[in-house]
Amino acid sequence: MAMRTRKELRLTMMPGQAIDLVRTLVLGVLGPALLLGGCASFDRQPFEAAQIEAAHAPDSPKIRHWANSPDLLTQISIAPPPPGEPLRVLALSGGGDDGAYGAGFLNGWSQTGKRPEFAVVTGVSTGALIAPFALLGPDYDDELKRAYTEITPDDIYKDRFALAIPFSTSVATTGPLEALIARFATDAVIDAIGEEHRKGRRLFVGTVSLDRPGNAIWDMGAIAAGDAPGRYALFRRILLASSSVPVQFPPVLIEMEAQGERISELHVDGGTIATLMAAPPVANDQILRDSQSPTELYLLVNGKMAGEFELIEAGLSSIAKRTLEVMLFSSLQDRVASAYVWARSTGAGYHLTFIEQDFDADEHDLFEQDYMRTLFDYGVERGRAQAWQDSPPSSDPDTVASAVPETTSSED
Image (cartoon, rainbow, N blue to C red; front, side, top):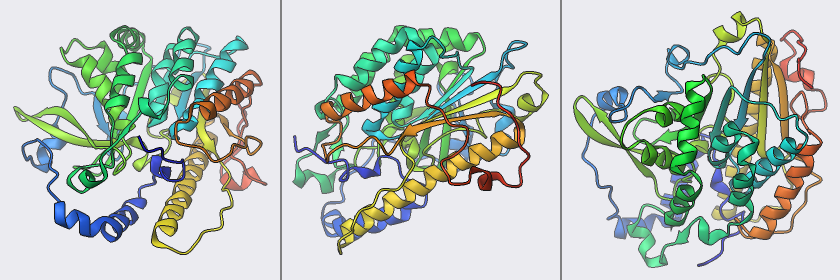
């Protein structure tokens, strides 16, 4: 299999406005080949917009919500915390193989004996793969470690034959990733998540619908706690969709039911629009304001928060790739800053961790095992140190929310 460097696959988590640029890149660079061989198709029946709005998983309650829905906060049910306990929300970002940082951080945090239980955990892309274990707690740290230190590129994707790409829906296939997800997201793990859901805890994963542009928020705990025959397969399929980088990996068909008919929706990487699914919309403002308990928001970013210098050469490919990187960087900064403003306005505590500039690695292949092990160990050290900061990285964090009154976090 041909190895791909991290720069070659830097589209792991694109901001929404990058979609037009991807279209330009595909049409400009691959256009002639695509026109000659545009025979790729999806095995599904056509359906209408009204059907996708009304769609639900077969034999399941409402387990999918749209992030841009005006009544989203009334659709998502989050139980208030027990008296005296804060409502803890953990949001895990995308980042490809940099997810080794988040896996390591959670392991290191557990080793301090101070890692709390989270009422709500969210994840997109690689963060979606970490999220189930983050919800279940330290007992699953070994599984999380194995998932990010014992894999190679062959466990994630397989390149298509070059001449087949114009006839395909992606550059590579994700059969290996699908098998990897099945190995770790076992029926027993999914059942355990269902048990936590019944206790009032919540697990949300984000994907992006290509049929109805926008972020889909999947209530994974509700899926796990249900009794639908296909719940295990649906759970894993959503994790696969949330990690399927458009163009690089094939979109994922998710079977839904609408108006008595089965429809197949097309979903891709949750980070195509949102690199981080924090708050709002995953925490109900009314709960936060009415609760007598404090709220603590934790953002675990699987990546760096500082732009890195790179001298760009002339050429469509290099300019397009760098533009996407800049868009991604800006999107992540916006998400982190927006969560900070939200936390300040609601009185919630704010905790942020990310890969600092002191972690420096040589150019390497994507999902290279040595790199991921080194980053995992770095994450363990940061987790042991409980390396959280209470504001976005800035020379003057108060400028991020200058119009918002100060609040004090209740947790160190």
